[in-house]
Image 1 (cartoon, rainbow, N blue to C red):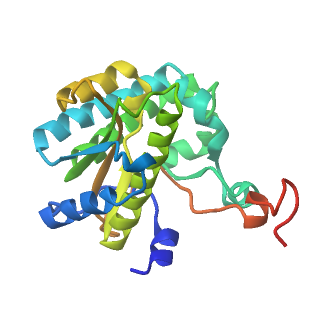
Image 2: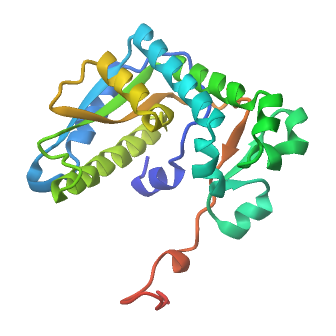
Length: 259
């Protein structure tokens, strides 16, 4: 696949993956391509764990699903992310950002704006929205043939120092490389974010993977081969719109149009 084509076609995989294992060749390709990413003074601060063991994946899936339910039940999810929710194509066209919640059970559609709001807790509880999303999260992770964890060495990842900032930039390059490589070889990729918002849950996964004390697990993704025929999750969204370049960037100084 052409590089520019891969960049444009890259997207988050919200649905289940095909029921086939990721080949050793493709796992090695993902790691090899990641190893070529830039890093401060060629420090290469990252280490990777390719997780294929079904038992471990199942345990991580349970933590991810429970984390989703907890974040919704205590309101953190809504307070932090409500500003990104869109409920129509018109809203998406207007803002050119956020996620369009376009797929959910018919019984929920009349209440979608109330459900996805900071004050919608009672409505969410009535329709069991947190549990629906938690179950979907657990199923998606549990059915994934590969989880890919990224760790950073604490020698570089010092959060209050510039080396920490530089190592995060390097990890960003790794993540984009992973997304482009998976896109190019017919795979999908999705960030498993919910456990990271609950420190004790994140620490449980880190302990499960035997991360040594001198490294910190910073990100974990689910991966697998894409199958367009697979149904979308019970509640799902799209996020394909992009802001125009003249809104994103200026020439020479802030506010001066590129053209």
